[in-house]
Image (tube, rainbow, N blue to C red):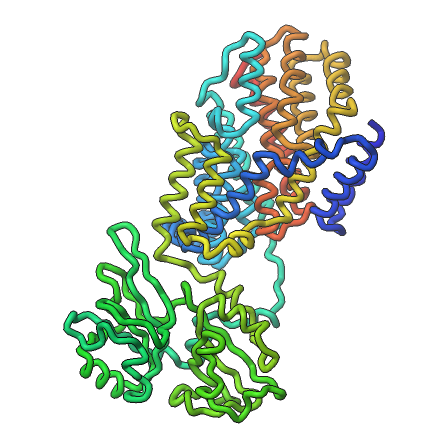
Length: 620
């Protein structure tokens, strides 16, 4: 017992200090419990196979799909119409919408769903997401208090009552309590987040040196010389010919940047295959070529092959939205700096063979302050030239390691992760809706963790997340390790008798105390325990204790049961007591002390209010 308490105390001190990474503290605490033989390896590692932890992994991937397809941005823009430019209205909308979703979806699922949406909303409103993400996590727990299925502690206290011969709690019997918690949360969090969750400063130098993909093509003036032609007429001479057969550059001085081809479309989903136009690519009807060159050459090419020149207001796919610029769904751009020792110097672009060797096109050359866009094939490469290359993302990734003749500037793959796959948004919405339905509708025989994992796999298979590598990158492993490593602490507390000691102290020492005072003590004990162990485990430990306390003094156990579930769910002073708190920790750049500054006052105020309100709603 002493060993467990020491490990818990040291861990708490390190968490509060913030001088050591929280996930490292959690792992060290777990190792200490294992080395001291408090826990067996099976008990210590059980957290990593826990369904909640696995669900969190899947929800990160689902959230990544929601973000990468632009679905989060779309939903956020709809909400932003209601919020306008008011930060207070935006805060209220986040709290209310999150709580409403949390009534029917697990608080973990609610946060995973709303997190990318709130980040997009904050960016659109020009405010810091730090002021919204912690309230988001807290609101999900408040929303969970409104229904029986909203949070696990609600089910636990209802089952405890039923097991001991009392009526089960109704589905919406929690609603008055949940509404009060939400009202208290809004009133308290509004000033606290403004005082303590100020935006963290970012390095201005890094931001200044980072160019977005759109900024790159605009800097080189690519879009000014960008034309789109469509093989629209079935009588076109281009149908059945390869790009090499056309020999467009030789005859017209035009560079072929990419080819887009419809891969099947219907009224709900439009899928476009974006690819570089390889020399052996055979053109088909409705194909769209993205060309760079002078207008005169473009017009001659269009006339010779009976093509359709698309203006900037015409979409290449019927019934679609206008799209007159380069997109970066499957193909990206990056800059490479030619080194002094490069063997390419004094060789022309055509001689080097970027396309055949590396699978990329050269869109432009930046030489000192001059930008060269015409006759690129015959341009000789100079020392210090910066080449704007275009290719599939996997080929651009290879450029970093393929040669020592150049240096890839910036982080193009990081920029690629910010590109939204807009045409996949309907697919992501369908997957998300199916996941929520499976978690809410009892008649669907699928466990929540299974529904989440299926949704995560579908996000990858359907292309809403670019690849498995991109899926892994969406997972916040620090949060996963932190939560999984701290879960066995509750097992250690129970195994070493700390929980029994608490039970004896409450039942034997305070059994004859007034109901209101005893209710306050039960609430306080549950609230303190939840800071260090998960709310689900705390509810399981405290529910029978609270019921025994109520029976011992001859009063109704219902207000005591509500005290346990509210105290267990309304834990805001720790990032690892509930999954929602942990989910937003990294995204909001929060430290342990941020939860203490904002969450602890809210937790204390919530407790004081609930101790006096619960007997009014559920008399002794």
